[in-house]
Image (cartoon, rainbow, N blue to C red; front, top):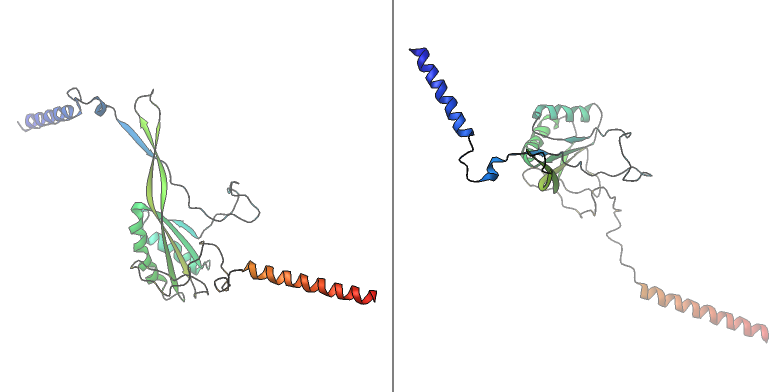
Length: 236
C-alpha cells in the first residue's frame, strides 16, 4: 500500500513538472524563446604607463603589481587581510590599492576597520583614501536560435577605489577618509591622483603681460637714447 501511494505521488509530481514546462497555452510567443546572458569581465582600472612607453603597448612582459588587489565576494575577508598583512610587514609596502565593483563595495568597506585592527599596533599610521566612479560593462545576450545574432548590451556599475597608505603623512597629501565619512585635515585638492603638485604652485601670482611689455618698451627707448648720445659724442 505504501509503495503504491509513493508511486502515485511520484507520478503526480512528474505531471506537475510537465504542466509547468508546457508552453503550448502561452499566448505570447516571445516568452517561449529563452536567452542566455554572458557577463564579460569589467575593464581593468587605468594606471600610469611607464616612461618611454606608449599607452597602447601591451604590458604582458611588465612585472605584475603586487600592491593592487581586486576585491570580490568569492574570497573571505581573512584571505585579503593576510595578503595585505604580508605586503606591509614582509615586503614593506607603503601603498596598497583595493579595487571593487557594485555588489562587493559593502564587503570592501567592512575590510577597512578589520585592517586597522590587525595592523594598528604593527605600523605607525594607516590612512585610507576613498574614491568612487562609474564603470561601463558589457553583457552578451546569446539567443537559442542559431540564426539570430549575438547582441551586446552596455550597462553602468558603481566602482570604488581604496588607497591604503602606511606611514607618516607627507606634506601636500590629501586628508584621509574612513568608512564613516570622517575626514582629517582638508588640504588643497590635487588636479590628478598621480600628479605631483609643487607646494609653491598655489602661491604664485598670475603673469601680467601688460606690465612686462611696458617695461620692455622702456628699456628699448633707454637703449636707443644711450646709442644716440654715444653717436653724437663721437661726431663732435
